[in-house]
Length: 174
Image (cartoon, rainbow, N blue to C red; front, side, top):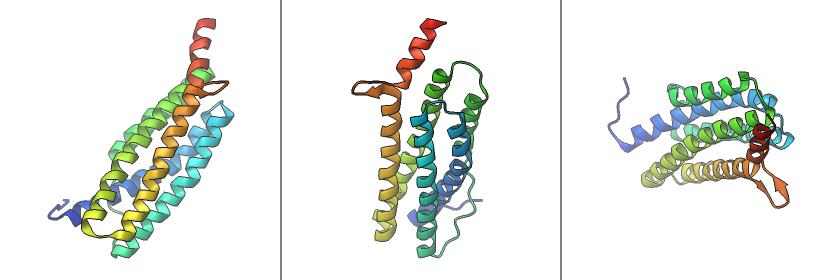
């Protein structure tokens, strides 16, 4: 049974949760990439896979600095989010609508990660773990950028229609 007797205990517990979450994401992203019909969305998933592998490495560095083992916590929240994504992957239907659904699923994952990294970064700061704080902030920044990219893909940009608009127009063609 988990013991939370100090902020340090909570910090380690939450880091382990994030480590397991990132491990699950690394396993899920290739499937999401393969399921995406949009080239830009596939590339975004592939890029985030590379980043997620780096996030795992950073977490391992934090654990090494603290003399702790990263293994020991399972993240059921991430497991549930990934199961939602797998339902979308298996769904039939219009490819642009599926891409819009994949973006929504991926953004749920990003928001979970941003919440987690924001918390552990704050704990690291409170505990005086400057190196950990820096690494965790770097990852938090990347998670935020991934979320912004997904929003851009969904909404489109200057002179470009986003995936959400393609999904909307495919509905009117049906």
